[in-house]
Amino acid sequence: MTTISRSGPWRRAALGVSVATVVISGVASGSASARTPNDPSFSRSYGLHNTGQSVNGTVGVADADIDAPEAWDVTTGSASVTVAMIDDGVDFLQADLAPNLLSDGYDYGDNDSDPTSEVGSNHGTQTASLVGARGNNGLGIPGVDWTVGILPLKVRKDGPGERFDLITPSAVAAAFRAAGARGIRVASASFGLRSTITSAEQTLVRDAVRASPDTLFVVSAGNSARSNDTTPRYPCNLDAPNLLCVGSSDQNDALASFSNYGAKSVDLVAPGAKIYTVNGRSTYSYFDGTSYSTPLVSGVAALYLAKYPQATMTDLKNAILGGVDVKPAFTDKTVSGGRLNAARSLTIAPAGATPTPTPTPSPTPTPSPTPSPTPTPTPTPQATTVAQDDFARTTTGGWGTATTGGAWTPIAGGPTPLSTDGTQALVSAPTGSQERHVGLTGSTAIRDVDAQVDTTFPNSSGSSGSFYSYITLRRQASDSSFLRIGLVAQGGSLLIRSQNSAGTALWNNVNTNLGFAPGTSYSVRVQLEGANPTTVRVRAWKTASAEPSTWMVNSTTTLGPQVPGTVGLRVSNDTLTPTTIGFDNFKAARLSSTSP
Image (cartoon, rainbow, N blue to C red; front, side, top):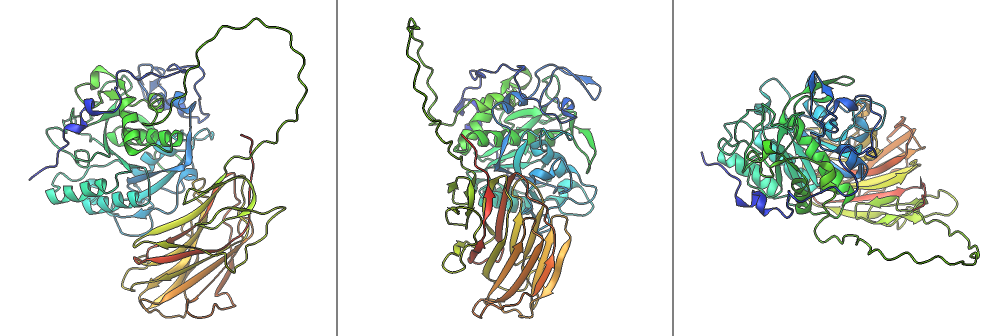
């Protein structure tokens, strides 16, 4: 069997940053000024902060960690950064993780829209929590990123069997391509593919990685205590410039006894022995494996993008490898020769960034009496940016309206709905799954919303979730709570379906009585009223016909009160054809203004 190997450019000498000369400016490792969260089990997370404490019966070496508190002095993450967790799926009701989970993931293992983990399978929830368990919330553990968007892309097929046999190369390739297509900058993959993977399957997965050059794929090295240089493991050994392979270190900065290694194939190590993370909806346990080292690296990548959103993939990779703590135990075992260090990586600015010059000291002049200055009025503080749409347009706080593809329009004095004439913002979605949303940041409550989608379904041969157009209202990247309403083409019928984040159907398969004809354009309009919202109405019609005046479905529900953070209205489409998506009437939302 032909194997795909990693080539010369992966060697340390080819990196843009010398790993031996990077220092932390201003904050010494272990500094008292480092930020400490109030999560009750933080002291068990030696990988984040190691004081030499005893963890699960083992005493460690101080500072054999990733210097997370020092990094948190710089940033604790951002809701604008998304990490794709390509794993076994997640439990959306895990309280410590739920605030950072995004609801629009996908199950590529079973080819459906539900990325919830199978009962008894906690692996994806465990790894996702290491990236993004909400920090400083007085609960459980902190993730590397206290605030981040976690998008679950499930690749393990449900059912009995060996985990690696249930994760197929085709599912992995599809998830990798989806992460890149969505513009996600970091993808975390804690698994290995079966040992019998063929050359064609290697190429399939490699090409999926290469097809997303702006996405950094962080993958695990494996737990067989052997060299990946001589016995390749995939996806670790794929030849792709935007891939990082991660081995495991322990509490004493030694290579973990189980960890795979490779001076040409494993890029760095991160703590992976006796890692404390979730083990169910409300319980926590210790685990070993490179699966648990990988999300620490993914989390640091997300921190870096929170600080340097303009960074390229190459900037990101160089900062992670250039920021490692070089240790004797890793110099002949990894490309970088070191263990992950979040704080050091954050000091490595992207290429082309202009550093702040250090001022030249000058002699202090002899003071002389000066007259008291005449008081001047304090200028009115300017509002900072608090909203951004998919096209990177930003706005300041206050009452206003927004449409996808359009600018934020302030409204003086309070909420006034947009006119339905001439204000609909339309965007053309390319072939395949596509989403558009407007995110609003601050102490925000979505008020009344009307949203409309006009879409053409290509055929009706798919399963119930194959062809759909959904409108989703949710607390974007701040809470997993959402309400999804839309059209589903199933067999010879066009149905209205709705569900919430718990999987409870508000309406299930309401027949529109429109029949179904492939190639015909249909419209669905959803109206939500109240800040929760509490009243939901929906109707559907053939786009060429007049919109009916009555609602087909009229019900009440509670999405939950909006909280400070980012909220979003999202329209998604998986019709496999170019589709016009329209936000017909995004009514006012309250945004808070803050001083710079």
